[in-house]
Amino acid sequence: MDLKELILKTRSFRRFDESYKIDSKIFESLIDLARLSNSGANKQPLKYLYFNNEKDCEKIFPYLAWAGYFTEWPGPDKGERPTGYIIILGDKSISDIFGVDHGIAAHSIMLGATAAGLGGCIIGSIKRDELSNEFSVPDNFEILLVIALGKPVENVIIEDIKDSDVKYWRDSNKNHHVPKRSLNELIIKLK
Amino acid sequence: MDLKELILKTRSFRRFDESYKIDSKIFESLIDLARLSNSGANKQPLKYLYFNNEKDCEKIFPYLAWAGYFTEWPGPDKGERPTGYIIILGDKSISDIFGVDHGIAAHSIMLGATAAGLGGCIIGSIKRDELSNEFSVPDNFEILLVIALGKPVENVIIEDIKDSDVKYWRDSNKNHHVPKRSLNELIIKLK
Image (cartoon, rainbow over all chains, first blue to last red):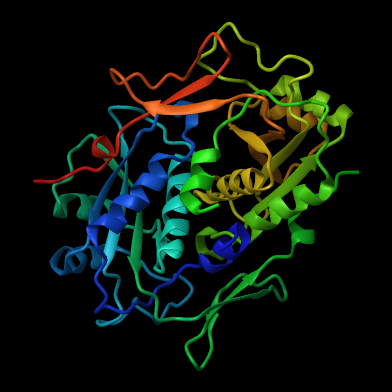
């Protein structure tokens, strides 16, 4: 799979086959991809927690907000929830600022998930204090992002944007549509 | 090239063959990879400027800080400077916050550069106001990151970290060494 195909397939998935278990080795290989990625001033201040057992996944789920544009949808139903999570932590004993390191790391993890036949969703809307308390995360760690992972059961379709409306939407067959701005709109030509 | 190999090869390069010109089409394909990557709430608030002519590259160079740990090194000498730049802008008319979008976008661009036989460096230490003035960047755009690009002429070697020292270093043959923390150090096991 070339890079463009890999990126095209790396969509945000929010419905999964909850019977599919993800092996710990997969998580370690995904975190290894993040480890080997670029880091500002090479400080490498990110640490990782991963969870793949049912009980932990159940605990994490209520602390996350899903699909902000679907105001009527509280997130995936039982049976379609993620079967794994990676929590990206900032280690404040290493640095106070994390720059774009967690964006880079999350992207490596998401691309790696696609390459491994999985899919995920980067979640930034997190009840951080509650999640931190739930697992007694030590004080020197700040929760930066959560990546939900699983075997996707939804079809995500990229399409051209219409009327500047960026809101993703679901059709009657539950296909998830994602409008993308055009390249022409993104590249600024200065006079 | 599989993803791990691609990520391993995507290092921060700071010395380039300045005789190598990068075609505009390459820039557009790199920005297209960023365009197709995940964006928080699908807002897609990033815009892009790219430069590949000598005059513009000369203008941009002095506004960037290179290799913070090499306090004696002002950046690449003439003949080894980047032959292209992408400036990632945040469009404040779309959003006030850019989350980790620019980290994700920059990583896609860097991976794409590797796949195209090029290399680059994500630079966050930028004289933003001066650079903005230089090109009369409209007020609604905030400069988030600059990615320097070119045909690398340096060898970058990843190695295991020693004594927790994250500082990259150069050997007498100008090889650039980057110590990386171990996977064991990065994965936190909670009790």
